[in-house]
Image (cartoon, rainbow, N blue to C red; front, side, top):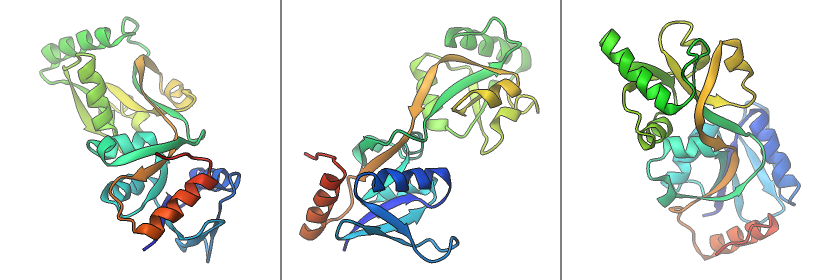
Length: 232
């Protein structure tokens, strides 16, 4: 057995993660070639590195197959039902920040709030005979946010890429997506309405279901102390 740390396997998120740990005395080192998903953790005992796609980390945490994991808070909350009972956030890492927002065409000049959107959605259904479509890959988060706001007259359609283009392509009337600067929204003639649904950033999470023996518990405690993270 060992404490397993899952981190993103590539891209800016991986590099920022490596830097964050290194600044706190824990060095994570890739081994082999860039095509090999292998590496090691230096500076603490009994910690095994697991390189994963950021979207896979929530599943592995929830299942208890990794002890710690770094991924976006939006991904955890979207992919894991009742995530609070399975995964515990330990630290916000200060990078990978983005907001989950609802956006509509700029030509909808009289739509600024969710109440406005709700009224337009109802009118759209009566006119066209089907519900207004929101393109997104964040079904769980969007549905929860709109339900809390009392918005019901819509349907979610799945979009795993180029979501901002779905309105121009006439496959959706609105979108719900992650944005950092808003530049892509602006380029596609979209505007944000209502409040931010979720403010996401890279976060270090702990699995509540990972099986740990006594040495594992001691190694986990030592690692978290090295990172400056106090535990109960």
